Image 1 (spheres, rainbow, N blue to C red):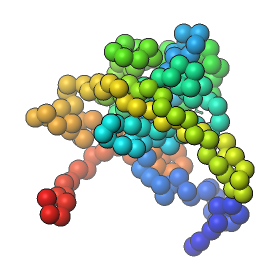
Image 2 (tube, protein in one colour):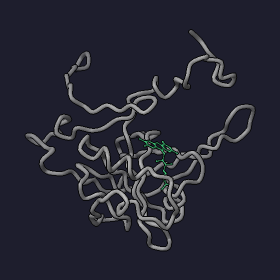
Image 3 (cartoon, rainbow, N blue to C red):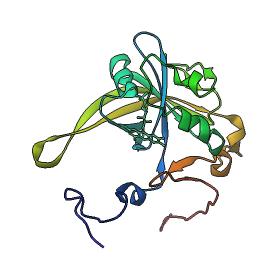
Amino acid sequence: MFYEPRKNDHGLPHRPFKALVAPRPIGWISTISDEGIANLAPYSFFNGVSDDPPMVMFSSGGNKDSLVNAESTGEFVCNIVSYALRDAMNASSANVDANVDEFELAGLRKAECRIVKAPRVAEAPAALECRTLKIVDLPGEDGQCSHYRVVFGLVVGIHIADETLIDGLVDAKRLNQLARLGYHDYSAVDKVFSLARPGR
Ligand SMILES: Cc1cc2nc3c(=O)[nH]c(=O)nc-3n(C[C@H](O)[C@H](O)[C@H](O)COP(=O)(O)O)c2cc1C
């Protein structure tokens, strides 16, 4: 089959795009508002974009609270979601008012960050403290602005739970990271294999 997204002529029950660009890691973004209210929400339009220095991005469909706080405070945290945290992650995605603290909503503990003011998820196996570098408004079709805004961040501090390390390496199975597939589907890392690059 073939379809053109701008015509939405796939003839399927749901748009298949997100099921194809999958699995996507989930950036569980914690921020703090100018009023001092903690905020937490999952973003699967999330990824690392460089490793030296480490940088990440998340993409917000409009001015959601995470973006507003990352823009006004200049900081955010990407917490890594393990399979064990799937229900809390989902609970934190509720569309609630900016004055609601989703840590409390999802029954999560806050841990202090070292460099940024926003709290991190104490239960998360890892967290990236970030400084907001740039926010890019994505252009849409025919020069129109899409409603997506991408937040780029410089990673200035990295927390890793000791129990996820084996012989100094992050063990993917212990991290047991959750990823987003299409529709309402998720995956967790349970199969790992290695490939050496040619000539190395
Ligand atoms: C697994 C998952 C991934 C999500 N990814 C995104 C995303 O990439 N971009 C987005 O705008 N919303 C995404 N959402 C929806 C937001 O989490 C939701 O709108 C949330 O209420 C935003 O909270 P905030 O306003 O506190 O930032 C996702 C939801 C779930 C459950």
